[in-house]
Structures are given as structure tokens and as C-alpha cells.
Image (spheres, rainbow, N blue to C red):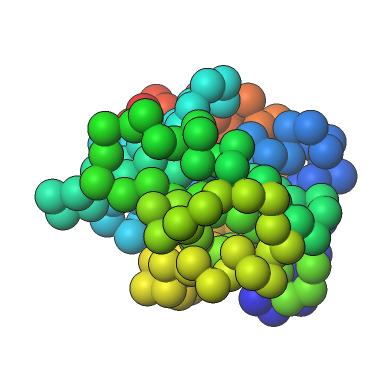
Length: 168
């Protein structure tokens, strides 16, 4: 991701605050999934999974994290997703260091979920979806930034995308 988009994400975080930023990233990912032709997108801000969606004939459950440390507790993510009656259970995390990237981890490939350093978690990457998401992510970040300037709050944007039935 170019520095321009990295800077937009930092500006969004400053505008909405660190706590709300996780929900904003979840919204941005939901919009990006929609652009990738996922359907029936449900975004939850409490409970699990964070996002449920369908693509072709498969159903997906996603946990989304903006990581502050170089490690992740896959055991907790696995526990949150294992009960979901879906085809694929995926963990998406935003690596906000430059260059900013999303990583999609296939939780079902992790034999023994445990707290691990991000570098190792990347071994379980769902490469095709990671690449597709990273291709549309910058444009969605820019669109979100422009909406935030126009509407002033993440809540207003959330109402707008629900009204337009972009996500449920």
C-alpha cells in the first residue's frame, strides 16, 4: 500500500480514536468484501464472529483485528470461530506498519492454536483472498476517508452503509 493510503488510515484513526478504529477497520473490510462480490455480509460489533459473509456457495466467518503487538493469540480467535456453522473460518489482521497490509489467516489450517508471533501466523495465510483484499483495500480506505470528512463520524457512515444495504 502506498504511503498516501497509510497516511489516510492514520488520519482516520486520529479522527475516530483508537478504540473506535477497530470497528472502522471492520467496516472497511466489510465494504472491501462487498467489492469482491461477497454477499449477505453481516457485521457485528459485539460477539463473534465480527463478520459473516457468503461467496459463491461457501459461508465465511471472519474475526478482524488491528494489532498493536507483534504477536496474536490464535487460541482465542479459534475459540471465537470454532462454533460457527460455516465453510471457512478466517482471521483478518491489519498490519498498520508501513507498508500497511491486510493478512487473512485460515484458522482451520492451524493444527494447534496458540499465541504466536505474527511472522509465524503468516504461514497459515489464505493467499488468494489476502491478495484480492489488498488490491481493493486502498480504494476503500480512500472512500471511507472521504465519507468521514463529509459525514463527520463513523456512526453516520455505518448508518449510511446499512441504509444502502451494503452490509447488514
